[in-house]
Amino acid sequence: MTATQPSSTAAPERPSGPSGARPGPIEAVPVRHPGRWIAAVLVLVLGIGATASILQNPNLDLPTVAEYLFKPLTINGVLITIWLTVASMVMGVLGGIVVAVMRLSANPVLSVAAWLFIWIFRGTPLLLQLIFWGFIGAFIPKIVIGVPFTSIEFWSFTTSDLIPATVAALLALGLNEMAYAAEIVRAGIQSVDHGQTEAAHSLGMSPTKTLRRIVLPQAMRVIIPPMGNETITMLKSTSLVAIVAGDDLMSNIREAYTQNYKIIPLLIVAAIWYLALTSILSIPQMWLERRYGRGFTGPRPTLGSRVATITQSIALPTREARSARASKKGAVS
Amino acid sequence: MTATIPQAAPAASVVERPMVEAVEVHKRFGSLEVLKGITMSVERGQVVCLLGPSGSGKSTFLRCINHLEQIDAGMIRVAGETVGYRERNGKLYELREKEVAAQRRRVGMVFQRFNLFPHMTALENVIEAPVQVARRSKADARAHAMRLLDQVGLADKAGTYPAQLSGGQQQRVAIARALAMEPEVMLFDEPTSALDPELVGDVLDVMRGLAESGMTMIVVTHEIGFAREVGDVAVFMDGGVVVEAGDPAQVLVDPREERTRAFLSKVL
Image 1: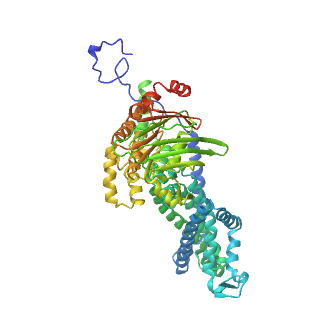
Image 2 (image 1 turned 90 degrees about the horizontal axis):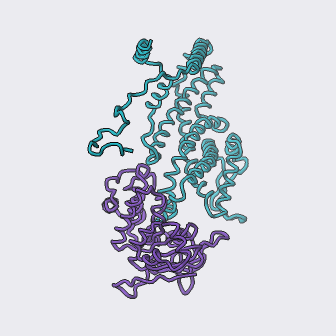
Image 3 (image 1 turned 60 degrees about the horizontal axis):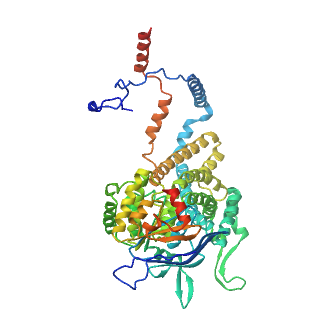
């Protein structure tokens, strides 16, 4: 209430309390976190101890690690692993979108077929599927294209010619991934507000165009993080193809250590490569998340700012802060 | 219970068919009958305001006009064309989704919750349908979109994403987006109900301008003042029927029906 103030003098430069002075910033002793310090020291001691003991272990054999890290055998394995991962993920994601749309379709036949597909390929172990595709020739020796229940044949192939080991591996990984991707895509599509579809329809967009231009781009926000997980899982799952095809990183490494018995150093070589590849994978994921996050959030935190936040929360008090506090204490006493 | 709307008799053409024509429209959701025979006709250039308590069926009726809901009985025509069906030899054939989409192009719709595409800027929202549906060139669509954004007072927000706009600004972009397809009739489904009170005026101003430019409009609204000032016809609905329809100055000031009177006394 400004009723007490005479209106003639009303030329307030700042609307503030009766004294008119703005209070200075709050100066208070910050809360101490002794628990954080104890935990940090404990973890550091344990970490340094473990690292030291590993590095001093003669079985580590770093020269062998260095020797095998860039050997053609290793590099070829890495390339096959990358190829298998990329190819089966492309197959899995594209097929997964189709299966997800089928699953959401109003056509009961399509919906049930999609459900059945997911049920089978998500419900059995990947290893089993790999072996199955590897030995598909034993199950279906010949693939015939013709009229069923008659002897009319247009084409016939021997299965093992049509599906060599690498294709079998790809089929197993890709089909398995399709089932998982379908569920992720379905969740993504369902997360988009129905009002978006209605708005697109009211503008005269067809259902296909609505899906492609409006729903899927928004679903991508929800789809990408779990799909990143899937890609990392796939990268590691490619090591299972050793059973049928081989030539991937893990198969080559295993082949090498069964000959020279340098198991641990060679496993470390493989681990380094898998870690390097999964780390590299997070870059396109971050890029995709930013691309499809447009319009949903403000500027996203960069890696640098995130590190800054972490260091801030455990930061040591700076010298200035300490001396300031000390001088204040002196002033009080 | 039905009511025909007294027509303001457009001066130009006498035999012109009504822009929107509804005959005995029924719609049920499961066991709940939401529309119990709505008959109404809207002339080209008319502004019709639908009022009534929530659950009276006014939004559902609006959504039936562009086939977002399918009606169970009766008939809706937009510019003489039956919505959702083709009549041939006295038989009705259901339209394909593509044909329904083509029909919707002449009807613009503005939603209560805006439904802007959040992954596109204001400008991209407006040019999306002209480029993707009407196959206009991007440059052409962009120039048109900028004029429309200017018309709704948001030319400076063309590059902004919806999340960074206020509700009122989002709704005005949504109006520009609907206008970009050059519709013959505009449907407004409670366009100001989700807005903060101080933002309502800007949206209503845009709608007033649109009405003055001769656009045919059907507006579901709780803004009695707007209906009185801008509307040519006010329709009061309750329980899935039209209770009363006519000149807003009469329906909204001195209604004949007790139900209208009771509703107005609660809203005003």
